[in-house]
Image (cartoon, rainbow, N blue to C red; front, side, top):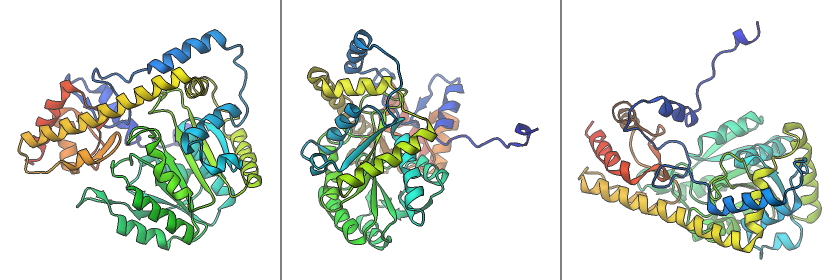
Length: 399
C-alpha cells in the first residue's frame, strides 16, 4: 500500500496553531498567531469597497471563462501602478511585467521556480528571522537558502550594521529577499536612509533583490510604504516583487496577488513574462478570476478607490491604537520589562520579547495562542481581550 507508508507531516507552525485554537473549548481563548486583521468584534471584515465591487461585478459580469495565463493585462497594469507609483520609469519604458498569482505566496513560488531555471547556482538569502513559510517555498523549488542578520533583540530593531555587512559579501548572481514594509515577524523596518544604503550595496554587489510586499498600506500608507522599494530600484536595473491583496483589501480567501518582474529593458521584461507564463501553465494553468476582478474594480473606479484608501487607513490606525493600548496596559502592570518598542514597530506583527516558556504557559494555562519565539499578531487583539492578555503576559513574566 502506498499511502500507508507515508508518515504524517508535522502541522504548519502557524496554521496548525489555528487548528489547535479552534479545538480549544475555553471561553477566554485568544488567537494572536495567524496573520489576519480583525476588527474590535473579532471579525475579519469584508471591506465596503469590496462589497460594492461585488454588486457591480454581479450586475456586469458576462462569463466565468478562463483568464489569460498571466491574468488580465488591465489587472497587471493597475497592480504595477499601485506597487511602483505612476511615475516609476520602468512603467513608461515597458520594463515591468506582471503576472497575476494565487496570493503573495503564489507569487513567491512562481518567482522561485523562475530563479530555479535561470539562477541555478545561486542561493536565496533571507532575513533572520523571516516569515516561516519563506524557507519552505524556496526549498520546495529546489533552491539553496541562506540567511543574513536582521533583527537585534537588544534594541528590538533592525541590526543595520550587521545586515549591511552581510549584504556586502553576498555574491553577484545570488538573490536577496527583502520585506518592503511591516516586516514579518518582527515589525521592525528600515528607514529611508537605510534603504538607500541597501540599494547602494545591491548595485555594487550585483545580487538580485526579491521584494516581499504583502502589507502595502499597513505601515505608513499605500504610497509611503513603497518608498524603500523605490529607493533600491533607483540603484539597480532588475528585481522581482511579490504583491498581495490579502491584507489591504481583506481578500484572504480569494487568493489575489501578483509577481512583478522589473527588467533592464523591455525585451528582457517580455522574455521574463514568457517564462513565467510557461511556469504558470504547468503549475495551475491560469489564475482565479473573481478576486482579481474585485481588486481591479477597486483600483480603477475612482469612488471605490477613495473608499478603499479610507478603509486601509482605518485598519492601519486600529493596529497602531492597539499597539499603544497594549504597551500602556503592560506598563500599568509594572512587569519590569519595557515594551515601548511595540509602538515603534509597524504592521500586524511584533516580536514581543516573550520566550518560549512564556509562550507555552500562555497557551496551556491562559488559552492565549502565539507563535514560538513570541511573535504576536497585534491586529488580533480586541478591546474585550486586551486586559486579559496584559494580565496573562504579566503573570507569565514571573516564571
